[in-house]
Image 1 (tube, rainbow, N blue to C red):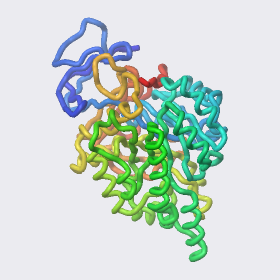
Image 2: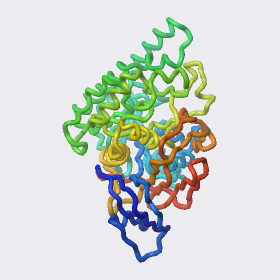
Image 3: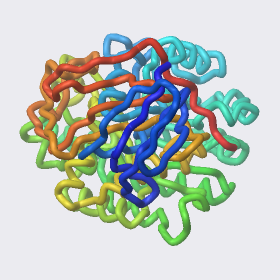
Amino acid sequence: MENYLLKNISIVNEGKIELKTIYLKKGRIERIDNSFNVKEKVTEINGDGKHLLPGAIDDQVHFREPGLTHKATIYTESKAAVAGGVTSFMEMPNTIPNALTEQLLEEKYAIAKATSLANYSFFMGTSNNNADEVLKMNRRKREVCGVKIFMGSSTGNMLVDNESQLNKIFGESELLIATHCEDEKIIKKNYQRLKNNKQILEPADHPIIRDENACYQSSSFAVSLAKKYNSRLHILHISTEKELALFRNDIPLKEKMITAEVCVHHLHFTADDYEPLGYLIKCNPAIKDSKNKTALWKALLDDRLDVIATDHAPHTLEEKEGPYEHAHSGLPLVQHPLLLMLEYYKKDQISLEKVVEKMSHAVAECFKIENRGYIREGYFADVVMIDLNETTTVKKEGLLYKCGWSPLEGHIFPASVIQTFVNGNCVYLNKDNYGKFEFDESIKGERLLFNR
């Protein structure tokens, strides 16, 4: 493994931007100081005019392996992730077979150990009859990011609507409980009403079917269970103004037992985008009207929403085609979340320090990730060099997703990811912003550990 000395680079970390020199040695951050030299052999990098950020940690991705590898693999999507400045990910259990046992979960870890270019963790899945298996994870809470519950919204065999099972998991699990919250009864009622009225449904009907009430009803139920048992609850992909009343910002993140995530597509797209993009942006929960987007941004900036993620969920283009009932929900995003947020920084909608807080620091705090999420001496060297004076055009030939498409194709970002280091290894190098880049795949990512 090479050691690196990044000289005169603007480090964005813990609410400050400071011009420093940083030494990456044997996978860790050895020293951060004003200009200095080292005696050991190093690769020197001139950081003049560039910024260095802690690597983004994406707490919600679907990398589709095993069982759905025609859409994606852990290798392909982790490669896209590091190209986008995402150095660690937490992946969901709705693969095939669903990760509903300790053995199936460990099989996913084995795949990642052999193939992932980014650091990784995997959620334990839940069903209506595997609570005992879920609770086995209490003895391994340092090694698993959390328990995932699809509450009230059908996802394969993973819909959990058995209240005795929910009470058992919320009452006895010592892991973070992450929930997808949409009420299936409301969704089905809305669907049938629309179907009766117009027969053929359109992309713009999606947020009417999966509406604000469906989200709020389920989220409020999850919060009530968490309060009843004092559980550690993290609600994923908040998409409505109505749900924001469930969260607080009057205490530090470290003291919160109930936290919330917002995804980049809910901060970027609105219901108006169904007209040009159609089913390409069909996802669950649905992208909704601009009123909700405005409210989400406000809550992100005032800390009712704690972290930013992608919910990266690739499908083939054929699977995204209509009619409504055929078009799969989910979109690929893990190659561009940091660039999306840097665009909003350039628009003066969010500070650079806040981007880092919500995509790195806060994720590490939420999940209690060990020695990551910050640029600190002794921490793992998961860092990303960006150039705020270059642009990046999203082109099909530059996409690294196995599905081969993005709803952002043609978009020009006013920034660029130049280099990504994972555990001190320069895994990604962008040579010219036009599809010429290099990867070092000789060293794979590591399993995330948690201070619980």
